[in-house]
Amino acid sequence: MPTEEERPVVLIHRIPALKQPLASLSERFTLLDPLLHSADSTHSFLSRHASSVRAILCLGASPLTSDTLSLLPALEIVVGSSAGIDHVDLQECRRRGILVTNAGNAFSEDGADYVVGLLIDVLRRVSSSDRFVRNGLWPEHGAYPLGSTLGGKRVGIVGLGSIGSEVAKRLVPFGCSIAYTSRKKKPCVSYPFYANVSGLAADSDVLIVCCALTEETHHMINKDVMTALGKEGVIINVGRGALIDEKELVHFLVRGKLGGAGLDVFEDEPHVPKELLTLDNVVLSPHVAVVTAESFAALEQVVIGNLEAFFSNKPLLSPVKLE
Amino acid sequence: MDNNSNNIIVLMVCPVSNYLEQEIEKSFKVFKLWHFEDKEQFINTHKDSIQAVVGSAAAGADAELIESLPKLEIVATCSVGLDKIDLARCKEKGIRVANTPDVLTDDVADLAIGLILAVLRRICESDRYVRSGEWKKGEFKMTTKFTGKSVGILGMGRIGTVIAKRAEAFDCIIGYNSRTEKPNLNYKYYPNLIDLASNCQILVVACSLTEETQHIVNRQVINALGPKGVLINIGRGLLVDEHELVSALLQGRLGGAGLDVFEHEPDVPEELIGLENVVLLPHVASATVETRKAMADLVVGNLQAHFGKKPLLTPVV
Image (cartoon, rainbow over all chains, first blue to last red):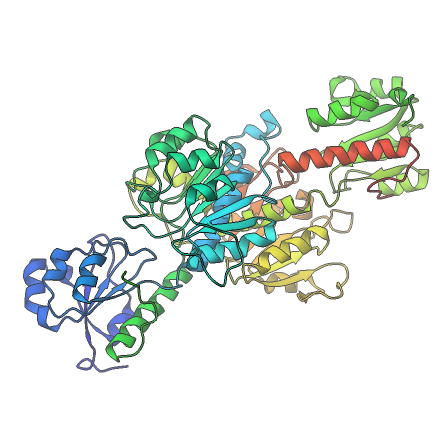
């Protein structure tokens, strides 16, 4: 372990609601946390330390804007700690040549597990029939409405990245057929590729949304895509709420124009459209697809690994390509 | 098909589905036992004409019923489980028995995995968290990862085998216990159930219910599974000592449970209703449109085969 003098400086960037980072980081790095210095405003704190800050650790989805970045002229790297990176001004980072890293594969398995859990829940009515039992309705009503089998379902994955490819691997033994859409066709992948999401939706029974949120992908799941998916279709979203036109989604679900949905993310968290709260063919979760003790332990390793690689001029573990 | 088949009388002992009733009625005359207030009197009146009994997981043909139907030739159950049928007596009397294996295997296995994920990742609980407005007050808790965990399967039959294959895609470590070790399986065999429970985090009950396996998951097995352990039951309620299960959950000696079956369906122990670390389902492991139709078709197919003097499609006895 480096001595106190040897520990490189890392600026912690977080919204107040998020807790300070784990102890293992302070063993290796000198952490500067503006929120722990209430005497100083963040602006003046940053200005005072600006020349020593080459690395910033962005906790969770704390927005990192060009305003903050402009106070740090010596900044060379932004280390992200979530699966998504849409809260960081990537354009500004590209302009200044600032490196960016994300959580790498730390969350991929848990994210994929959760997708499968949501899909089984929606198709087989797990949460709604658990409610049925808890409400004492089983003796009165006898059977609960039948679900739909997973086997033979055509699953369309929107974004075959680290989470999407883990989802595909898990669903194959269930008898699902896999197809995908992505910015570019993946050369080593045998699943059928669709250049656009509407085409994929037309040939799918289930759409799994697990891609990054960018300007291009905002509201990519729109009215046309939902119509193409059809009234038996199911959407699972563990990406970002804004990937789906939420108003249209609600409209489709309420009017029975879509079969069901499993939603872990929403456009205005923690607010969920109230119409969804009484539907039995949706499963709602509070942005927890990757939140396990194990994934956070893995994340810690990725964050430390990226910081140590940066400070020793070695290749980064999970660099984000800034196009 | 014998054109006098419409005279053959089939007794359905419990409701299964409208579809099954309609299909049986196309070829046979059907009596529905639950329509008769005085069941004993009904049986007495019709005992000499009933040639077939159709049951399900809920009810079948016990010794008493079999003895009261001298013309009984076949018992066809709309289930793979045979615990409601007195098989020995049927064998003794030359009564055929048919069930509905294979067509429901995938759905049951899918639900077993769904229950594991629902319990470990607290999916139903977090759905409640959102619906009740709690999310507006604060973040939900951290849950437990499924991928890579050790899964123990009690009963490596058709259903257990398929559950294992699905769990493999989650990189799970699979162990199993069954009456005999199965050849050519890449999973570790534990001849002793308590050892299996001690060595896995998730125990899936997938064996058949017989006199020998009643309460096979008892206090010792539950304790061996432990405070971080999860019990999943998609077999039969009676395989688990329900009283012990409830007390283990209440006392924290067991981490959680996903239950599709109970000792006295449709009654579920009141104490479980208040627990967040359990998922409770109304015996729906085979309950999809597709599978229930396939099961019903198999029941009708077996009846038609038997009375058409052809080999049964899925004979047990």
